Image 1: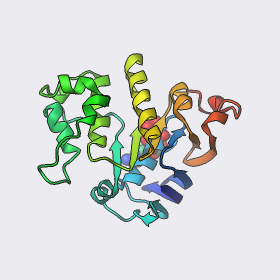
Image 2 (image 1 turned 135 degrees about the vertical axis):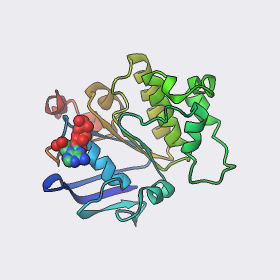
Image 3 (image 1 turned 30 degrees about the vertical axis):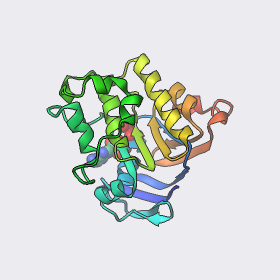
Image 4 (image 1 turned 120 degrees about the horizontal axis):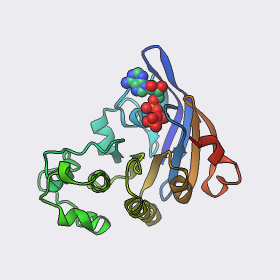
Length: 230
Ligand SMILES: Nc1ncnc2c1ncn2[C@@H]1O[C@H](COP(=O)(O)OP(=O)(O)OP(=O)(O)O)[C@@H](O)[C@H]1O
């Protein structure tokens, strides 16, 4: 579904991503693990077209998208939940959700399903995004990314700074979305137990390179916890 091949990326003279290759499949959660600063966020930004790559290719359903604008990638079916959530603090919950539909026609309704996934958003529809708790903002960021019904959902550390009960809710939603079978999920995560629980496939990065990958069920046996322990 998603095929990233030999991607190299630089910030100025610093070589940040080194020949990174990975795949993600519909109906599966692919977890990308790694310590701080190994290039996980840069990889996601490269996938979204927010930073340019120097060499390599990114294919979505067999189509090369590495030269497309972020806008075109969203249209092609990628939903992005950025690190730090990036909620519009002065807009209401409803307006934030509408931003997820910005490239569709003005009359496209917000899918009712989002309120089933995250009931708290329905209660808070007219509150400003900035007034929500961190966990609620994270749920809003995920719902915003889902509003346009993506084929690939990309999440950058959704558990960062979130209380355990909401982490559980978010984990349940991610599992359910993958199991539905119409979406691939790429999850960047530093919280090993959460990653292990959700991973169908895993990829470990170190210093801009992929150093290990395999099936989620083998993570423990393959000693991945040690590789990513902070
Ligand atoms: N805009 C930038 N300009 C220059 N260097 C950058 C920039 N953004 C990130 N870097 C550097 O690139 C490297 C990879 O950063 P990146 O944020 O992708 O790592 P990460 O694995 O996502 O870490 P974290 O978990 O802390 O977000 C780091 O050494 C970082 O300092």
